[in-house]
Image: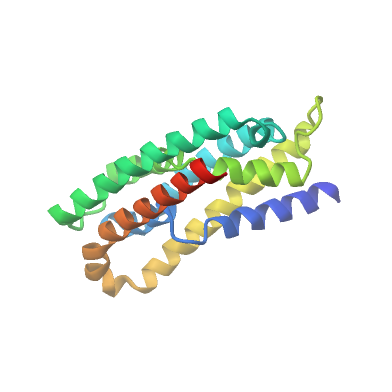
Length: 207
């Protein structure tokens, strides 16, 4: 019963955590536009694999990271540098224009690695899962309950994949507007990265 409760809470927390437009889900949408639905699903799979690792790391850091200003600042500063680089990248890409590529098996295979890379660059889920693991008292003791940890990690990954899959399905419903999306998505991503830069700066200097 405890495991079921843990799974459901973590699953829906992860699912809702990916709903707002962000780096990973917008990458899924952009991949659907350029390479098709199947490639978008592969990106979602790759991102969900990384979430497994991030959630497991969060369990070990629970109860420690928020009490250690040095580690918190390192993560925030690393995220700041990444977001600045990505903001520049997407703005330059938007200036150069975009096009829709044909879907190939190689594209589908590479999409998994794209999902892994994008999710690895997104450091925000780690403190999110740390807070969640702390609230659920996962990894709070010296002797870890590995069954609870595995339940937590799997629920986090599956919840993330569910939301990303909904992004794939939603994108298919607006497929006729891909030209508009193609034109402005990179600008949107650049603006999003800029907003994340501001948020990160605020968290660095005021928290």
